[in-house]
Image 1 (cartoon, rainbow, N blue to C red):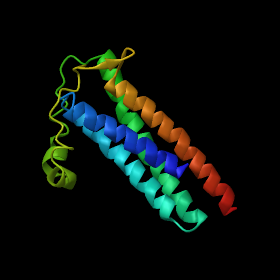
Image 2: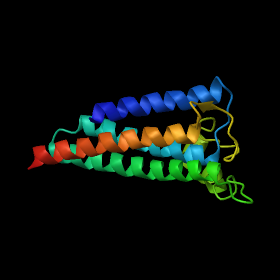
Image 3: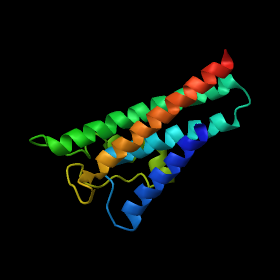
Image 4: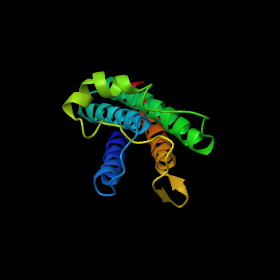
Length: 157
């Protein structure tokens, strides 16, 4: 299950990079937060693959679940505001700290720039916008991570 999480993360990030660099769709600050969450889930799942015992795998799967839940929360909110847009919103201002202060924005500025408009739908697939697809990916990650937690818990007992 942990390897499947890593695979889902790699595929999701490949999709995000495709949208950004091939389709030239600029990610918004909410998209960047989703990227951080999905990368966090992937890092913990990869660490779980390296863990020697069930406790390490349980801890890693639990952290991957937490990151996936956080990402699903952001993706869910992003999907919600696309359907019910607020009267005025500039998603860049509340998240400006991310762009200015978060170390990854310094290390990987192109991946974590987040200059796009959170309320603009530039691309859809089967009627689903990118935040909707992201939410689906996070739900798959949550299910997979919970299965990994259950498996590690059973081995621990």
